[in-house]
Length: 491
Image (cartoon, rainbow, N blue to C red; front, side, top):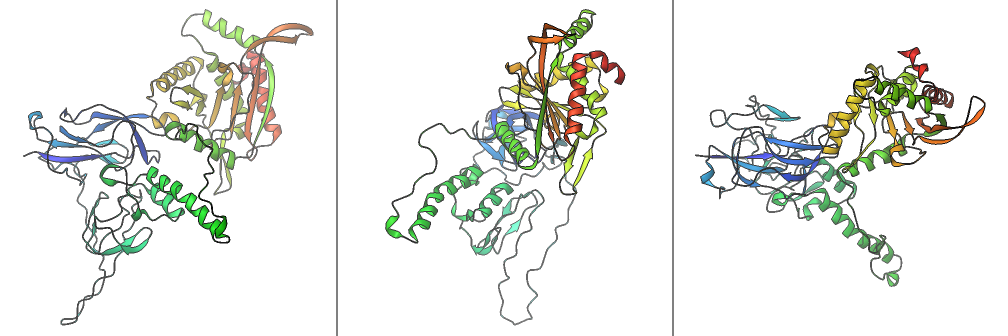
């Protein structure tokens, strides 16, 4: 007899709590093998192919392409031990989300961060008494409702009935009665606890005084999503304004007036675009940034690159030479290769350079990170830039490729602009911007000549250093651009 197992959206790491379904890789009725990718999802970090930990026949899928699901929401169900001719199961899927039983189906081990399908170790369930035992013959008293502790990831924090019990995987087996929710105590809905998984949804509702029990979720099985909460808040906002205006002067209330401009196209800030918006906003809120810039004669740098490429071997990119200059300058001015720990009120200087570089892709702006850039030569930097750029265009960058940077190089000259004041990539302390290299009149060796000129700009966190340090760093970069032989001192 086939065993129907439910596969839920796993924890994809880096604190991500939701993902958008981009493309289903299997259909209902398909046979899947253990660890076979079944769906492609997009997070705020990258595109990820999610492998299924079970082998069998797909009996159901949850969510259409373009749907955003929270971590822990059902993705699909698989009938383990069934043949393709059995077809989709008519009965309800097993909602336990547990790993397959040994002997019925083997698990695949840890496939992604935070979940695996091997046999879980036996765990003891601690039972907390809700009331002291009553003496014999005494009238029975109902036990007071007990608040369910919230797990570290926020999953399973729901409202339980007086006969309810919290499952180890966040699911709830419930009865009837009253209980305590994350937002207060009251009578539960007939169908049981509030169907919410994401802790962000609960916090958003709590901060705005919204009772989740009054909402109907648009997710699978009535799951309440963040969009449901936001829609409810938008619907309630005009009513709140009308109520406040009607209290002092009821005659002046003429109906709700929207503060949003009429018409226009609304584009959700989600995925990569939403992550970029959040990070840039945080950078501007927290970092007291300043910018300095200088024009430099890049003629000799361009000649040096041409000579390197003419000598044979792999071609050296201009970005790789600029990166090599950055790592040399950071060795002289380590204050800019740092981060501010606001809680400890300390500046943390790093002994390694993980160099991020801004890359524009079809999915938006991404900043891949070259690990240990200070230990790579020009050829190694060129190869790593090419690999990460190609992965960015293909949408296959992993969360590890996009995190952990200590300094960012931003070559906005590819867009045909001369200068910019870039926003620091939080929590880093500085970013070097490079404009286009174009022929301009320039005084060279006392005479006016046409030279290849570039504008360099440095945006830095004024908490980690003063202007003298920032100016010294930028001047050293400009000197290396104008006279590449200066780099020989640090090689």
